Length: 93
Image (tube, rainbow, N blue to C red; front, top):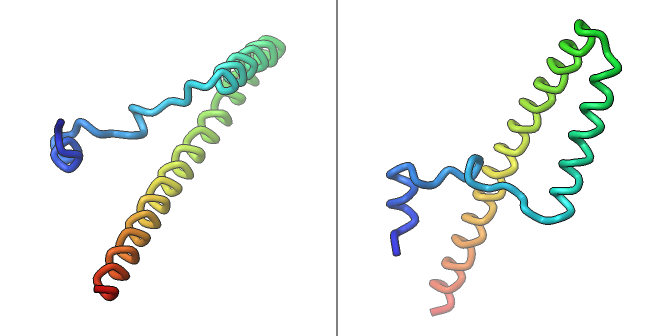
């Protein structure tokens, strides 16, 4: 089994591209969203459809930034918890 730090260093770990929810609820929601998107966009003239796609792209970029920040925050929080646990073990000895 490979070490996680080696995989990270050698570029084999990239959570944002390797993880995708696979629950039935997520799959159904994604299908429903695609249908709503297609149905709505078909009602728009080409200039409005293009503007709508631009707005969705901007929103997608914002969501990506939010997810990145949440991942970083969660990772730091987990690391702080480990430090606290290890410090407690050290002081209890």
